Image (cartoon, rainbow, N blue to C red):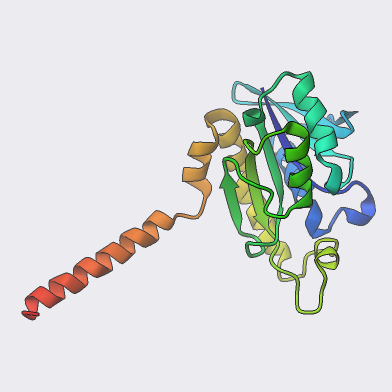
Length: 211
C-alpha cells in the first residue's frame, strides 16, 4: 500500500495557481487511471486506486499548503505505513517551469508544505516528485509568484510535465523510486558519456598530431 499525495490549496481561487501543480498531477493521474470517486477523509480528498498489484491512495490535502503534514501524518499512522510508502508531488521554484525531478528523500528545500510533512511524520525519508515552476520575476515576492497562475508560455510546459509524469507515478507505485529516478529523471550520465567521448577524441587527435 502506498500514499501518493499532491500538494496544493483548496478552493477555486487557487485551482490554477503554481502552488497547486501537485493537485493538478493528482487529478491527471486519477483521469489516467479512469478513477473519479474522491471522498473526504483525513482532512483531504482521497481516492483509492490500483496501480498494477499495488493499492494506492491518491491524496489532495485540504489543510492548505503550509499545514500539509496535518493531513498526511495521521493517514500514515492510521494505515501503519512507513514514510518510505509516501510519495509527495509539489511545486519547486529551484528548477525551471516544466522541469521534473524525482528524489528518494531529502530536506524541505525551503518548501513550507514539505517542512510541515517532515515535522508531522518525523522523517525526511519519503519520495518527492518536484515539478518546476521557476523563480519569481524581478520585483515579485515568492507569495505572489506561487499564488499566480502559470504564464501563457509556461502552461504547455506544465501540461507536458504532468503527462510525462503519469507513467513515472505508475513506475514509483509498482517498481519503486529508484527505478523511476533512473527512467524519468533528466539523464546526466549521457552528458558525461558525451564529455568522455569528446575527451577521448581530443586525446586521439593529440596522438595523431604527435603532441
